[in-house]
Every structure is written in structure tokens, then in C-alpha cells.
Length: 451
Image (cartoon, rainbow, N blue to C red; front, side, top):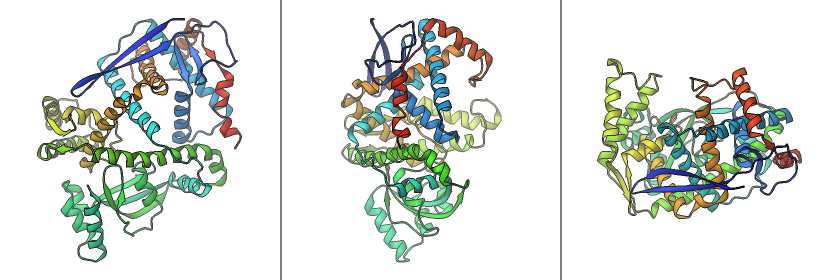
């Protein structure tokens, strides 16, 4: 047994941050079902390790997002899929396949997200005893869409003043929208952001607006990026829900609710952190850049490719070129650090932009917030914690597995059920000799099977 060091370097404004991931290599030649020294490792595949973190997250996402029903068969199938990915990652390391520029950028983005999320885990604690009626509410919301209009304010004083004026009929909701929004679309439609689904909104907004009465204006609600006054205009259910489905998914719903409660606590932490960061924003430049980004998002919304150089999208290509040309310009400063155009562009890759298209100010706030959180995580040495290092390595393994398979598949959309894919995995199994720690794997589901 000997140590192998993977060196991950990604740029951070004003300095570079280096993360060393120390991975112990362990090669075995047989299937072993007994306990291992590290309870978070459920399988070893050559020089790679499959962790409970990776399995739990990816399996939960699959169950929640695809409608697949949890079963022993699905659990084992997902385990085999992840082991195949580790086989490809192990082969990629063995063949010394280098990360290309896109892979380095993806790893950088994953690193920012992982360190930000682990900072939250470090500073945020919540009561995980969730009442059944709360779980049932969320189950209903998961199958519902709401049409919403909103007003946004940077601080609570402006929000409560506007709320009082509207309640006293001194001004209408739509008139306030016309006054506060810089985006022409929101000015004209009274702040209507359209139909939103579960998980589209900040969790504190979600838990206030989804159960709201249609047509009734909310009091000011605090989110991770400011204050909102909202009205639910309409709602529609996607599918019929039943007791059987609820009981099957109950434990997964609970984990999702806990995550949302942590995010609400984390948002309060973030708001306090940003209030103390002494942020100074270049409003003129920021507005110009956000208008440019809105153009790009509107163009992409029509499902048109951005990188085909023709007359139809010449303006968009020019906008993108200018953003890259001026990437080092300063959008904001805070406590000895800078937020540049490049940071904004990179930060957008962490966001779900579907419902941010008409709220560019929120895009700006979230990208700035995420950078401040990342830097705070680095200051607290979150990247040196065991779970963080393992998650960073899992991220790199996913990227390496994709690079390895590109040797055999030209398309990015590789058929995971294809015979060629399985044949490659089978041949690599003879080299990497996967070891599955069955008892540790089974323990992942103990909390489910005893409920």
C-alpha cells in the first residue's frame, strides 16, 4: 500500500487555491463482504473507491427525479452502474488520460459547489424529526405547479414599506413592479415569473407560496438573496397522488425536506455573512453585463445554438465575445477580494437558469454569494475535511470515466445499456478486480427498512 496524490488546481480571483487529495491505493484479488477500516467506503475498484456519499446522493436523485420505485433490484443495479463508472475512472488513471480544458472547468465548478455545500453541513444543524403532515405537504407540492408574480427588494425596509402601501391601496402591485424592476418584461407583466415547480424556488419562498391561497398577497418573505412579496395566480396538479406512492417515497421525501430546512438555515447564515462583507457593486457595469446575459438567455430559450456563426445569431456571438474580452473587469469588491465578469460567467454554470431568465439581478446575487461562500469555506479549511476530499475525488472520477469512454464513443450521450459499453466494463473488471463490502452497502438502507 502506498499513497497517491491527485493535485487539483483551480483559479480563484487574486490567488490560486490548491487542493491535495490523498488517496490510499489498495489492490485486492477477491470479493470481500466483511467490515472494512473505513465505514464510508462500500467498494474498491482498483485505485478508486465508491463511497456512501456518492451512492446515497446519486441513488436518491434517481428515485426522486425519475419515478423509479425503490427496490432491492434497483439498489443493486445502481451499485453496478457506479462500479462500472469507477472501472472507467480507474482505467483512465492507469492510461494517464489528461483532463482537457472543459474537464478542468467542470472540476473547478464541482469543487466550488462541493466546498460550498460542505460549509453548510459544517455550520448548519437542524432537527431531523419531521412531522408527517409536513412530509405530506411536500409530497403534494412535488406534483404541483404554481403560476406566480412577485416583487423583489434588496432590504426588508423597502419590502415592508411597499407591502403597506399596497395593502392600503396607495399603489397597486403592478405599479410597484413597474417602478422597481429594470427588466422590461417584468415591468410590463407585473412581476409574473410564470409557472414554477417544486425545487425551482428558494426553499423559504417555496414553503410560503405553494400552500398559499390563490390571489392572496403574501407578507414580505426573506430568501437567500433578498425580500419578496408574492401572489399565487394559479396552480395545477401534474398527477394524482395516493397513499401507496407516498409511503414508498416517504423516507426520500424526508431527506429532501431536511435538506431544504438546512438550506433555509444556511441562507440566514449567508445573509449575515454578506452583510458583513462590505460589498460595493459597480451598478453601471453590472446592469450592462446583466442585460447582455439576458440577451444570451433569451436567445438560448429559443433552442438555437449559440456557436453557429451565421447572420441570425451574429449579435449573440458578439455579446459572448465581448463578455470574454472584458472578463477581468470588476463588477464588485468585498473585504479585499474582487468579483469579476469572469466570476459571474463561471458562477452561472452552478445555477438552474430556467426560472432566472427574467430576473438577472438574482443571477448576479447568487453567483456573488456562491463565490463568497466558497472563499469562506476555504478559510475554514473545509477542503481538508475527509468527506470533502472524498466528494472531490468522486467528482474527478466521474469526469475521468467520461474521458475514458470518449475513446470508444464519439457522442457525449453514451448508451449505458449498449453491448459495447458492457463489454468494455467486463474486460476492465478482470484488471481492476472490484471488491464490494456488502455489509456496509446494506447498512445504507437500514434506516429505510426499519421504518
